[in-house]
Length: 303
Image (tube, rainbow, N blue to C red; front, top):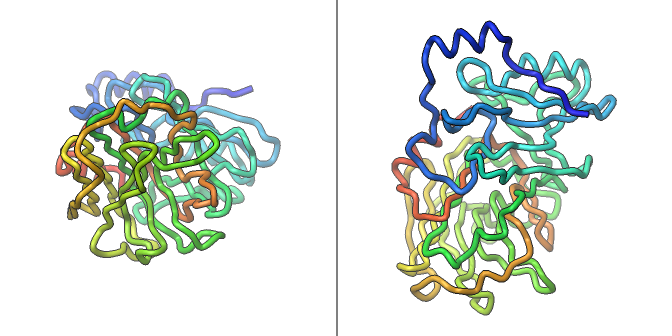
């Protein structure tokens, strides 16, 4: 049974008196938003649900005063055990939570009592590159039937994954008997792990991708955005505010919405293209979000 662990009543009252903090995604309209900090000031729920490795107990955790996950509460609850991520809650209110029920496939939040932190001491979720991934609930409608799609994350790549293949950050497959990619933001091994955005306009189309000019260094934290503009036959990939654009499919959206698989974070692709590294949040939208505004928002997710 999950329990709530978060800020005290006195602290919550103090926050209300101080007024609402402006959150990174205020003014942006995402389809789903998940993170280790509060991304929308309208969202007042827990950031995530965690599992304690020692006894498999679960608990919900809330942000502290600066909006980031309350790491002190997480490690106090976890004790000397490792702690794993069960659910990242969708902060849009649409219920598209990103979760993983398989114990061995859950990303890590703390190792043997020590929280996983970024260079600025903020929390991160670690994906092992072998089998860790999250599935978004109620996300099968995220499809090329829209004129535009945007996928974004703040992440650091640790190295090659166990299969030494591509590493999917945010991945939307078609599902069914033949798994095809309708939208993807990934590190591509054939491009020396440069970040790329790609997909298909129709299930019969060949996969097309646009790749960034350079590859982020292993271990560096990066703001990554993929934008698929089906109506304009263009795709954009942005790394830390620097964008590359290229031709993408034929112009126009499609009525082909048939897909049976939800959007994935860290991806369970066949062959397995698991992400090896860490991230702090993801944003997806059924629109072409402004790259500069989104990059500014993602800057606030750097750990």
